[in-house]
Length: 227
Image (cartoon, rainbow, N blue to C red):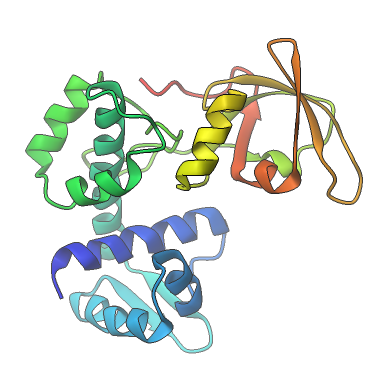
């Protein structure tokens, strides 16, 4: 198994932990679902990651990244997100087209090349989907936001990031202008996980709870710009 595959697993493990909050453990099933593989396939990779000292496993809890593994994951995520923003800002791709391509590109570029891409893209702070870009030292900037589905109405907000790689969903969100840095107002929300009524630039939109779950928002004016 090559190092590229292991880097992908490490990066995805970090993303899972990042969205879990205070729980540092990742289950085999959760990682298998995110990587779209079987649990036995994940177990085989986990053994190799353990040999590298990148993860440790605790019975009945799951696996967690070691400090060395976390650093490796962050550098992989840095290259991936820089590749995404470079493809959008410099090469002219749409934000719905870049995730898989960035996986392939980020796996092979050096830090020297990544630094040049960062410069050409204008030293961006976030990827096209609003996710923060780790520094060259492997430090992940802190982001304070929450799912739109958790916010009580009324509220004046700003889209912070979008937690999906699905091209069709990203295209749909773009048609609604629900993209990072977009100011929005949450007017009301129906009970029992009903739809949410939003206002964008004076125009009303209604979205379902599932879409609201993948939109993360911050108070208006509290989102760092992509560049």
